[in-house]
Image (cartoon, rainbow, N blue to C red; front, side):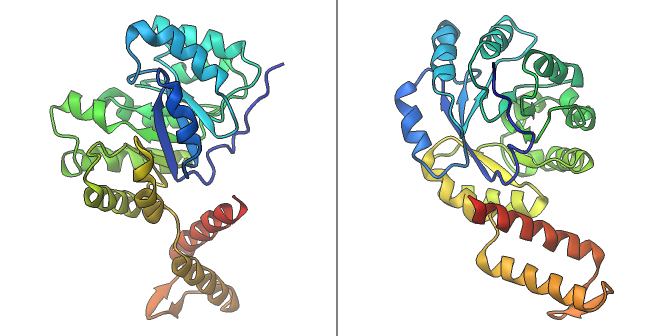
Length: 278
């Protein structure tokens, strides 16, 4: 009997580290890192001739912090991935779906793997246009912004400014569905300042997590995505002051404190508590 993942699998997720399914020697190193989730990739990181072996290796490596990015479910490789996972003794923490363009694709995974926690990647203009429907599909626990493929489709650089409008539309779709938003990996491995800047921008925009392609990127991602001790303390103080005032708008630290601001502070407290539990 296959164990089923909880739909809460993505709660508290701030980092997701990709590792190629064809590189099993890197699985243990990835799991030894501080990544919240390690995602074994069966799609872009694996050559066609290595798909079958990578699939077997990935399924054999399933553990509590392991996610798997399958191939597209409308492709033969994706169908094979689903068939193999359906026979596995346990599901991964998350199943990532590449280039999702409709809620029907999510339904295919949900039917093949009942109870699985699903993270669609929004990587095309069509997928972005329908992201609100995709996010509302049963089983979806988060969505990821696939900036690399989208940049290729648009003919622009994988950079902040060219994708700013697309990121904004993606964040709105995630907010409408009530889902955590995961940002695209930073691909310039030696540019740590650039990574820190983009992670801070993504966090300020509303992303709750960012993917990584190397363990040394995780510290910068966590610094941006996880509430600092000072910010958590401010959130607790703000909530206490608001409650003491009978939940009326008040002045707090020189600024207006009212319901919309309180909601943000409540989210910060929730994230901080989740980190403490881990």
